[in-house]
Image (cartoon, rainbow, N blue to C red; front, side, top):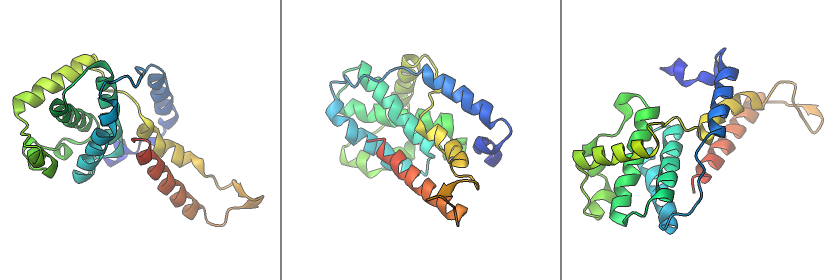
Length: 193
């Protein structure tokens, strides 16, 4: 799985990048017209916290927030139901982006502090119903590229040994690459807000 996860280093990297860019051009537009737009930050943070808790990859986290944005744009949803929607978006995204054993289990989600504080218990039937509604909303297409899908490819080509700094060759390419990755990860996370 490690080799599959690093598509940007393989011979097909340019082709995969081109296919992702093509899919990106066809993404549904986000209009920011949700009646619950003021709650978006809370639910994006909830997705990020739960995602970090289960050590999910950035692609799953970003896909989950994008699914939530698109879904909230189309429906007027109660706050209680938005919790189910947000966690269902995260589950779908993790099922799409992660290995099976990394996908959070229902019992694990129900044991989270945010769930117990709200007296919210997810049932298998609720989650299944919401996942089906989400899949129908997106016409069963979860291949929706986000910034997280591109970042490793761009980082792999961002710094080259022929690059110059103030007209001089760079002294430490590895250090430059580390800083580029650090700041790219930071801005990637900020972009979720």
